[in-house]
Length: 422
Image 1: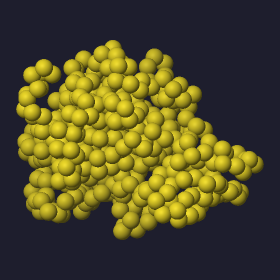
Image 2 (image 1 turned 90 degrees about the vertical axis):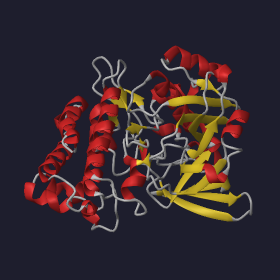
Image 3 (image 1 turned 135 degrees about the vertical axis):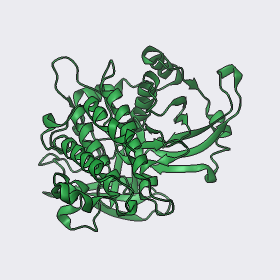
């Protein structure tokens, strides 16, 4: 739905945006918290545009940019900060403002940047070729929808001049309305997946950067996401041995990122971003929020708070300080999902137990209680001693003290015998 921003009004604690639906001319009011705006702002349209706020985890997400407002239903991913929308200037660090202004925006600049930083050959594809691959974005080919845009299943016919064999692929088409943030996330995937190669990272095959179009072409993962396989009632539950394999594979992918020559913090580790092939090999996908890790004497990276509610580490939520330990915490949440078969947030539980971490915490370090939280759909298909070890690892990863959490290389070493034992 497209809206035009007409004006805004301010009170001590809220800002009310007056919007007009462009298609029907219907006018609406949207009242949002001030979120730290100046105490006595000028009440005019330019101020509204400059200080438009982002709200997530509520009924609506609002983006106001250059006088246009896009109002959408709150995405199911519950982003801490809507990572597919442009952020207001006041929440960006100077480094991020400079990063936005320096983003390459045309195909030649993007290709130059990719060549300078990439080890993997990527194929530049025209938008007309994208249409052919997806049969003009056929609706029946849609395999995923999110705040970033739409993912289609597609098929590349033999393309000798570009070195491509016939291949089934996944095509992520970014929403052009996502502005600088959307372009930055698209570019992050091109750069990170162009320069990093590992069996447990999804393979990026090519991209399209033409006019306002931003598209990515990946290898097709026939098994879908771990989230869809873990929580769908239309398919049999994942066996214990597969869950251990998924945990091990995903941990290896994350360890590779943390120990790369230029360390990378993934920042959005969750079951919907872990994809499975037909043999249940797990690979990390969606690098739009990935950040270069701290270097030299720096202990963390300061950044906007972005990610997904229920997964983000508490110290990152409070300070915006991002470390490799932030990813380890998110891994701990995923381990809990695999152990319990429960989602990271569930408002059907008592209020103080909405978060899976809070619900499971009393049982994780108690050998006798662990069996009570194991996914009941597993029946007797799980070794009790291994489940206790798995729960202990999750508890360690979820330590409130980030310095007490394990390194990813140690997590991999811990998981290896668990996945070999089944």
